[in-house]
Length: 333
Image (cartoon, rainbow, N blue to C red):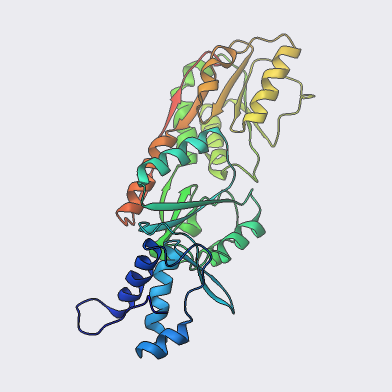
């Protein structure tokens, strides 16, 4: 405990003096990763401090990732890097090509003094809840991609409101939280309106939409558009290779696996993409620029989303920002 120094009337709060003492001991090599810290009761007794004062110092180190705690045992050194000013909990639904762009942009724009730890819930409500409950108090900032999960507000309410950011999908139950999100209902509606001349050569339009993994707003915006222009339309959960393509049909496919099956089906039936079968995919990637001479996409800018999210966290912003989508027309339509 000799490395902890706490003095009165020097203009530095006592909890901060404990933080500075531990940081200095790490930098001087007196404390290494895995080493235990003195007990809270021991520090309180030696320096005549309240338990809350010592806990405040340990919690600051904890949310910066410098220490970790084991219930019933104590606090230990977690990292010998002392220049982290924030430690971010990042919970994605899954990782794919476009979310990797988002993640890389987020990391690049945060700077080197912020530590990010990433987790995945894979659209499983129990995993979502477990990840969050086990993280409470360990991070300065929480970024959560809720996807379509229901009844998650109670667990999100465990996180201090000013530390929580909702990413990509929001909903009525999450309106009180800071967010950078897509307006899926509006975006698909406006994109289809923009493509209306190209859509007019087809007899039918089908949205392939998995309710478990895709935003409900896509269905709402799609249905609104189709009813307005009185086009024959359908919504299916998954594209099956046994499905019969009747006449000229456009498929809107948010999930890449369904897009691949549509392409396979057109080859099996000797149909031409862009003439007999139209494809509108979601979330642009470099691959979609070249597959089948170019796949039309509805896409947000994921690099921009990552950069804006980083800026919000750095500046402790409490905004709700809608990340814009655009239609990229290619030969598949």
